[in-house]
Length: 270
Image (cartoon, rainbow, N blue to C red):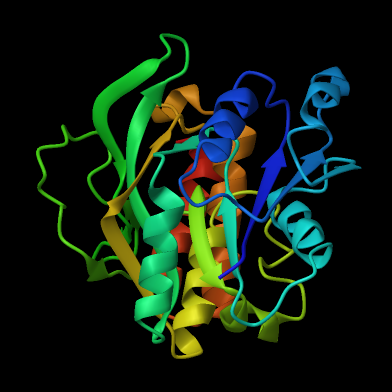
């Protein structure tokens, strides 16, 4: 199966060299690597990347969803090819693509696969020893969360399983599963945040399984801070607004939770 990787950058000069080093060290090489730069303030760092990738697309800051869609539409692919949407601050273990291909080849009912994401401290240049994500789950009242985030990795999630949603930092699909969306893989109305969950819901409605495998390992720096108040108000508002959009597109009683969260952020900056 040919494998195509799409990476959206935005002021990613510190992370992208590590991301590409890990990608170019894969036991199963990617057949193409596409970088879409979405409005970096200083694009000089991109010049050094052109010889490392298949395609480098520059655009204004159009948001994570639109930039990924732009990258996808630039590909020449077949139904059985694989596309990996990878964050620039996500660093794959050397056998990650091998494992991704094995799973998507073995089970045709799986439309999307992800792996165990471990925290990485970019400032110190080493793993944190804590989990970042082992799939996205939902609380009974509606809040979505990355399972295990912040926990010490003791192997407590080292079992493969179907999950409710997949983290967009490492989201891998067979082309067949997403071609029905006519190039708009991620909903362009989602500028930033929750676009991965919305896509997961659409894939499930189309009858595909979303699969988590602990054999696929990657390190993720993650933009969210441990202390929610350290996250800018603008970003928290993006997240809250997108949660409402998601439940308008996928009607659910959880819209009540989304509405309450939005008001808490909008009115009280929580």
